Image 1 (cartoon, rainbow, N blue to C red):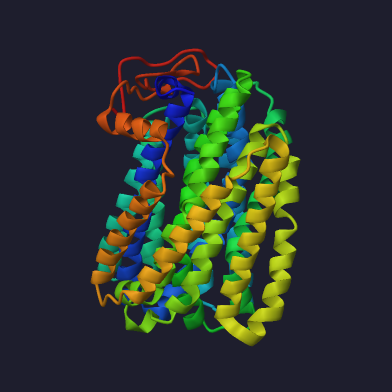
Image 2 (cartoon, helix red, strand yellow):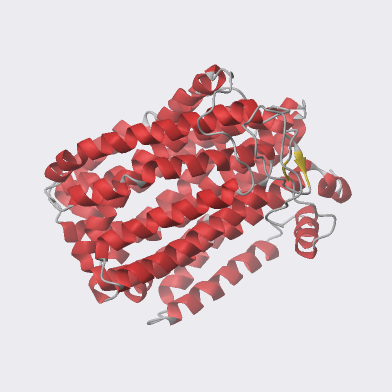
Length: 520
């Protein structure tokens, strides 16, 4: 494919949208690290451990609902000439399920607190559960926007959410509300995100649409089981630790390490909906070549994350001490395994996205299902002897097993395999990055100077090893200079255009309110 054709191709829109969303989601690790540093110093290990348990439990419930509908909605909206009939059904179903799960969490709050031997946890869970239907509703709007290719609206709302959360946390915790202040800040930031989405489109929340939801349910259940399994894979270690006898302080230390290891997972969560939308639309048009090209690029991007994970692993102790204080320095022991395990799940995420777009939802269960019982067995055998360090090792091993399964699936299904040269170059650069980070002592805030310098060296190494193609270099230059750029967004026909009129009427009514453009 020539450079000019590539720049004009829908693949350019995928990369453009991915960069925009990733730039917005990049605020999460930045604001998240600032928030974590602020909270660990104000809440202490006990308070931070309690908060981690509450947020993790409710977060699993929220992402379970999200996983039940997200990929099915994005795929079907992306393939449909009009997003509205299916879009409103998805919004209403997701909102109702959020309410049901909130009520269930209220009923289970006390049993969870007793199981984990933390009586105060019940009140935290009851308050945190209010966020569940709000989060479900906000994400339902995001799925529609992603399916139609309105990536800029997704990016803007995400940026607003992360910035608001940081601001709300600082204000409320400084005002003396402690753990409950953090939970109120999370709820407030979700409300703001929902408001930003509904400035762009307003599908009806309660009116009848007359549209059947069988297409969603047909895709949703296998994807739900797969996504819950993947989420459990990354979080069961924390609860296994607590159930098998760890103290709340140890849970706080391990939870801090998990939060630092979120970056690769965040990249996968941000890019996967965009890849699913673009590949689904390419396959719907019969352009299998474009779909395969985008898959190859996504796989390359996933593998090149390992050197960046290596930099964090090599600086784990310094990062933990700088961000969380001396009392959290032990976090650095668990971080290397967790960050590599999180990076290893990215190729699996690409494989799961491709099989969904290709109309094989049940294959996602076959990819993730075996990993959960194996990881659980590993935790039961290893944690009693090795504690948190053993838990992190089991989680990392499960991540690498998932990566191997994902690579095999991509090769067998579409013939997409990582080039041997890329694998060798990534291994060399990763070893260099880890050694440089480990051998360069940087006390205090200077660790961030080291991270910045080593990140630049990683890019320079890939450049010197000729990993970047001329087409990719030209594409990035074009995006940075803004040539030929028009950000698509939702319009009344269900397609995309350069502006985003607000949808005032219930979805399926065929009418929109004109005249207001948002998210320029």
